[in-house]
Length: 504
RNA sequence: CGGGGCGUGGCUCAGCCUGGUAGAGCGCUGCGUUCGGGACGCAGAGGUCGGCAGUUCAAAUCUGCCCGCCCCGACCA
Image 1 (cartoon, rainbow, N blue to C red):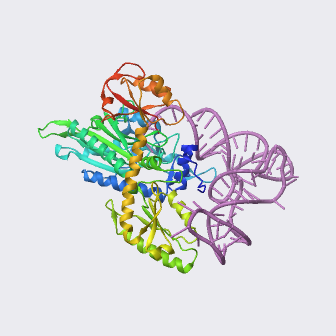
Image 2: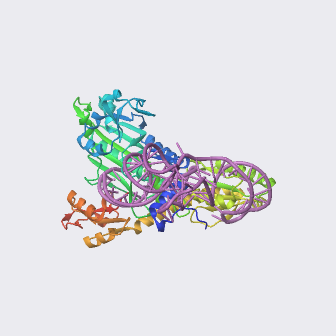
């Protein structure tokens, strides 16, 4: 195979990932430190994610709205834990005007244009939203309030990585208010299940669902649920979070409602989000040394048609026209409730071989070659991105065959990701073994072990092994995991096993 | 915030040590031959050598300061 300029995974997973994201045209580095440019191909994946999630949010009764990018500094500090959690990574707007530099070229900040109250660029929107919710909620009849927004947020990070950690990122953040603790709890779990289903059924990424330890939970939450995915280098990615906020923000922003009995009570809240980090997770979960491997439901190009004309102009016209006709038929076919996403690559000066590699790099799921010999035989040569041999298919059945292959691919990717996770989940009972597993550089998969439930132990383990508690699973991976035992670190009693991993 | 590395056409980099007309490959444009797994020839376009100051007859090259980016560690979706 030709050298595509992508570092093989075996030689450096990090380099492979960076090469792939850039070469597959998902994203680019930008002129701004810590920020990335999401290119059309990468954004198309994000749009597919948005559409699927948005449909699920709407179907469960949520509405979209939009709140300001700027949060008055005083708002952020209304909830003590919350501000403590985010203070270290906030970008702050202090002025509102520039002026010509009196001492030279360019412009400088106009010192007379200092803001009376500085504005924080939202690292998350709880505070600005709850300031509004106060005015929206008076009666139990206003509840539940189920709001989502699609937005960008900024968290000033020291170290960045395309899609996985950037100073600015895109996400959705849901914010809801409920009459009771139980209602809020049900909401947090409903969303967690949407996230799980999306990851598994759309991204073909199996995830653990669980609750975060006290130490890892969201700043200002009562408790935090999460989905956690294992990717190919055996590291874990927190792919989504759903927080039960209790009455913390209701109290901070004085949001009370009158019950049907006439009493005044604070509302119960949730917030939840997934971000463009999902794109990075998707890439790291399935892709290979040739390029992107995308599950068909997340693939901007599900089927690419490569016409082949052997350099003869008169043939080109014929074969491209036939390709377009074939593409139209495919586009009229629905798969997974959407018209097939089909591209004809009629570029004149690239060779077929180049195009094959190019579309493998970009993650097209199925390729159809259509050349003079195929026209004669009323066939097309079909190959799938991974897990299948190249073979001719009659043009009459091609729509069905493409759909069948997409079904296969979607299943195959989920299956192999699940096998991979299971093969890399271990139960460990001694500290020696635990340490040894996490000793080498890089990820080490999931380790399911007993923990005494204290923050001290959690921190000590993290310090000595770089492994953290990813979650306390809702449904044990194995019924045995739910039984009491002894903490792998302290030897103290533990009520159940929890999941450790090195995380992104 | 600590530790490294790097800034030279769009991209990857050579040149710098030892100062003297700014280079290569890829990409791009044009023409021709190719085309079923990354083709080739010929002709072109494209650079205030990160910035500022200094040394010098002369600076991509030497010196100082500044800026930016990437990689590795502590914190985060």
